[in-house]
Length: 330
Image 1 (cartoon, rainbow, N blue to C red):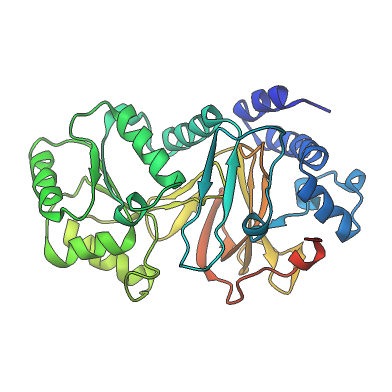
Image 2 (cartoon, helix red, strand yellow):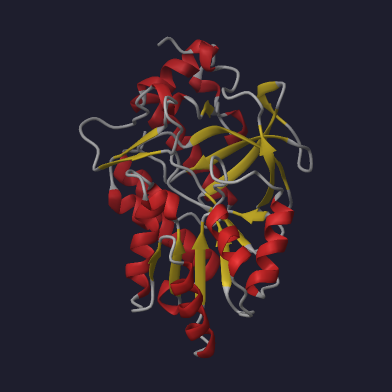
């Protein structure tokens, strides 16, 4: 069995489907042997790890276990702990990150894979709800991308929409390549108060309407934002506290993932079975950069798999916990 350093090398050099599949199996065995919670969950399912020979065979751990257990594939202390947002009284997920350097490598490579060199961009971030709390992996990533852009105009905006409007107008006149990354409710508030015609601007929403505004359909949100910013498409980011990597959409809610990720769709009535492309079910995420946590996560999102490493998100499960969590002894 490969050690973690050997696995990190393999993950960073994945070129094709064969590389991905062989590395994923190695990561599975590494995490089965080093992640006691994941191991216990698999054992309680009655699955023999020796029978796992393909990615499709791998059991995906329910994401809600991050709320109740320390999901770690390493010993010792974490370099940083990321925590999900949550309403008062609700449990939040925690991600114990062994290596900040590995997290940086993951999101920088994912950004470059989708958008090219970060230094070509001015990064503007409208993420007030994330800035107002501690432990956000999105804020950590965005802050680092802002620094990496090496552009004096890059920065965060809280609720200072007028300043954001002014800087966008200024950058538009300079024909700058700009990425505006924003939480949905703040982008919507901006759009209700300001209009700008900046056709080359990349507007990327990260989700985040819960508790701030009445939920609206993605198509309606994107339509409002397109008109306000004068752009043809609204981009989106698909990431979460429990993962190290992100998938991105450059429009129409269709996401693409980098070579070290994979999306599989499970049967909503049988969480251990997978279903074919084009059918709606639960989204299972493989994130091989999540080496020191769990790389095989059954999310609470509903979606369907499309051709060419693309997928669509269609909603969330009504129930807060995915069936199967009760197989784990507290």
